[in-house]
Amino acid sequence: MTVALDQPEALIIPRPGVSALLPSRIREIANAGMGRTDLAAFWFGESDRPTPAFIREAGMASLAAGETYYTQNLGRPALREALSRYVSGLHGVEVAPERIVVTGSGVSALMLVAQMLVSPGDRVVMITPIWPNIAEIPRILGGEVARVPLTISGGRWSLDLERLLAALTPETRLLVINSPSNPTGWTIDRGDQIAILAHCRRHGIWVMSDDVYERLVYTGTMGVAPSMLGLAGPEDRVISVNSFSKAWCMTGWRVGWIVAPEALMPDFTKVIEYNTSCVADFIQHGAIAALSPNRGEAAVADLLHELKASRRLLLEGLREFPEIECPEADGAMYAFFRIAGRSDDMPLARELIDTAGLGLAPGSAFGPEGEGWLRWCFAARPEKIVDGLGKLERFLRR
Image 1 (spheres, rainbow, N blue to C red):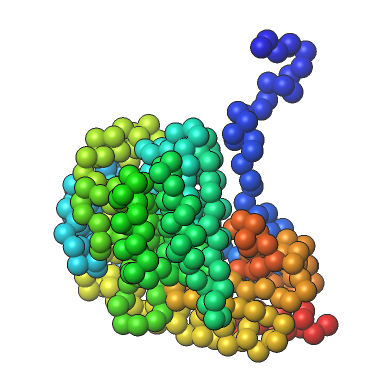
Image 2 (image 1 turned 180 degrees about the vertical axis):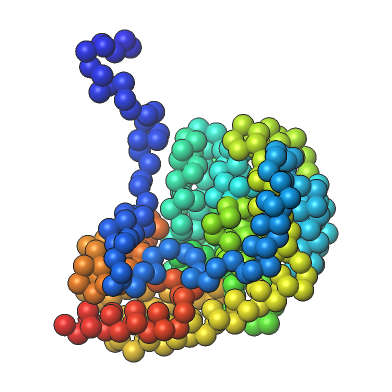
């Protein structure tokens, strides 16, 4: 169809699939409150701690040495080897460096995997509610997203395994599992993973496991959430996506990684070249430092110790209010809760900013299953959480 030149507005539009994408409601709320000095903000999923000094120093030393040139598409060999040792030790399986891809953030890793696997019309199944970036990425590529919501059972977030398996039809191309979950903190158990992997093997379904929060678990003594990497063989259709952002407080560094079958590496090389080419050298040096067995693990343990205390403080505070429902979960860095009688989470989040000085993420940002809920990131100093709880109490009692 020819568009007349006297109708310029008809030319300034993207393709329909992009126009149909949903904007981030987290960003919409944050933009409404950013810049206010009287506001206690808990809307983003990041710690208020800076990156540990030894990681920053490694990056600065690399910059000072003039290491500002292109690097390998799949990442520096030294970083891929360090990740191999880290992942293998963490999950008790051998993960060779040749199966690892270094990416320019965890969200970039999600996009790269989708570009590798998802074609227009492909069916992608997700356990929801889920971070909006994960849900929208397949839609950018023309995929069709089917959602399987978590339920609440006995005051805890729970997966209806039979419902999920029924949704994983032979026509399904990809299953996405985010565990521990953003926003709920739900963490999958090993028995469900075994059943899911067997089902997906039987039907040839790819599994992408978003393991970004795997080190942030608060029950038991395992120190890491169950991962598909502990079950899958090197040639299984299983891909793990991860990031340095959460466990090492490196959100602004924008560096992550992928573990995938080695047969995919030549094609990953191509899609990375045509997306970002490579990750900056000095950032990779910081990532190598983060994986050091002594200081790196000490930093993760220190953060987890603080998160456990902050989590307990927030959950106990929220449960003081009889009108609040806050199901239990084992991982991540969030409380996902709702206030009785307030199903309008977007207006509620705006009202909390305007009248209480409290910044929370609206639950509907994570899909229709989250409507009426709020997400509170507890990766914050105790005094900030106490201040936030006080603001919430004044709001509820006014």
